[in-house]
Amino acid sequence: MGIIVAILLAVLALIGMPLFAVMGGSSEALWLTHDQETLRHLRFIAPNVLDDRFAGSPILVTIPLFTFVGYLMAESKTPDRIVRASSAFFGWMPGGLAIVCIVASAFFTTLTGGSGVTIVAIGGLLYPALRKQGYPHEYALGLVTTGGSLGLLLPPSLPILVYALVAGIDFNVAFKAAAGPGIMIMVMLAIHAVYTGRKYNVPRAKPNFREMLDAIWLLKWELGVPLVILGGLGTGLTSIDESAALTAVYTLCIEVFVYKDLDLKKDVPRVAKASMGLAGAIILILSMANALINFVIDQRVPSRVLDAMLGLGLTETWQFLIVLNIFLLVLGMLMEGFSAILVAVPLILPFAARFNLQPFHLAVMFLLNLEIAYCAPPLGLNLFIASFRFEKPLVSLYRIVLPFTGILVVGLLIVMYIPKVSTIAVDGDIAKAYALAEKNKEAPREAWLLQCVQEDRSNPIPCTDADKKKWGADGSLNPYDPTGGSKDVVVQKDEPGMGPGDTSGSTGGDTDDDLFKQMMGAGSTGSGGTTSGDPNAGAPKDDMDDLFKQMMGAGSTGSTGSGSTGSGDTGSAPPATTSTTP
Image 1 (cartoon, helix red, strand yellow):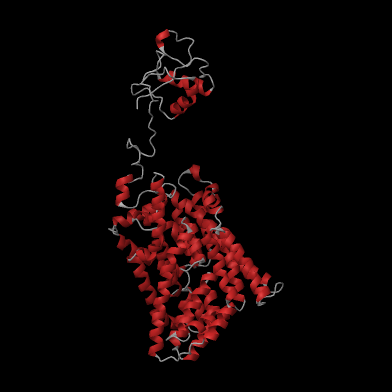
Image 2: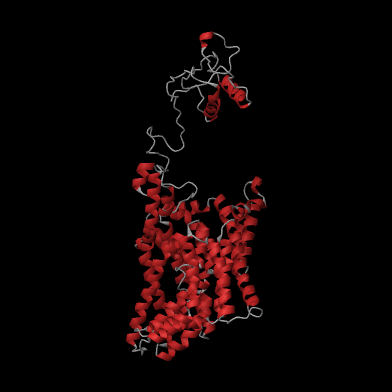
């Protein structure tokens, strides 16, 4: 029955059913047709939606606020000011205007989180300028189409925040990890721009320091946006949702009251309505995706798929990386970016954990695949938007974007097989986590969370061979325990000066400790421990009676704590304290 439901929902999705309805309907249908009758209830779709990790996440507040900021900038004259400043600083270089397009597109996408908005706003301004300056038609169109997805790896990118929420990783660390690869991709495209500029002898403007100062002065208020976000997060003065709120208020004030590009009564309500429509759709899809994942986890779908892959001989990390990136590329072309994150991330995390991938390496690969998928033929989202915006046949864009897609693929291969590119910025955090754990004489679990993807983030396990040898494969060994015990074993020791079975020094004040030990299982006499003063103390029934009496307050010893049998009086003495040989 579940297979039939899945096929039906897949058909509905292909004919245009909204993604949130597909996910929500799948969750309801799959639980109601569960193999076990006791689990056929809709309440099982709720736990992953209502738990603190999702419902209590500050990123849910951040999404609509950052979306609002992006829409405010797109509707104002911010794109014009960005282009002017970029032209002033880079226009004199070989391929200068093309580099301007790369920088401006990345900066704008970072703030808006949407490739379509960037193509319309930045591409619409720069495509005619590129053509006028002498760049070939194919290059200019391919560049503005590709530029629409640049910036996804640069903080404070909204896709990074959504990925961090779904994958359960620290978004601050994710920002640091993704920045390096994001800049690397921009540099690779800039090198190609320099080559193109020289090849076609594109004229260059002379450096004009006065124009640089004027352009940067005009852009000064927009430059405050990333400073507000990253400054607050970097100094610890604000959390991510507080930074988003400050940024929204700041952007509204500068666009309405400083630049006066937008009218408070006429434009702001329209912009707010449009941005909240997009933000609401993202959050709704997030909720439905979490509900569906609850069923996927219950049925152990990732484990079954992984077992099938291993059965086919897919046992090496490099093999898995190839399959993973092909899957992500196809998914990114078929689905909008946020939807792809919500659908794919929970599915691939168990596989990544099995192959011991670093969480931020995986994040960068995932987001870079999205960048490629946006502009990759035949179904890249940017292709459709550019075709509509510049009135070009869709098929004609396929050949045009191939050189740019190839550059992005080279960048992806570098990230795939040189993980240090995406993890070098995280090494300092890992070292600090190890140092703190060493200082506290405890397992470096925070470091393990940063080092490799964990199947169970609430119980991280070692990632490296050295840590597995020191802490055990499951992290249960405790090398700081002189007895060599594990983290889950409670080792009972006799009080100083007391031999096994000697309770002569016990007083009424020890009953609480004894009760705790018995509740933890330390009061068992199966190992040969004896109880003074009670000839039947070895019987399990008496142990339970003593425990019950102490829990009810009957174990108080009053003024006499000695249970010694020397007196021969066992009738009036309180229950004796049990001591167990360690």
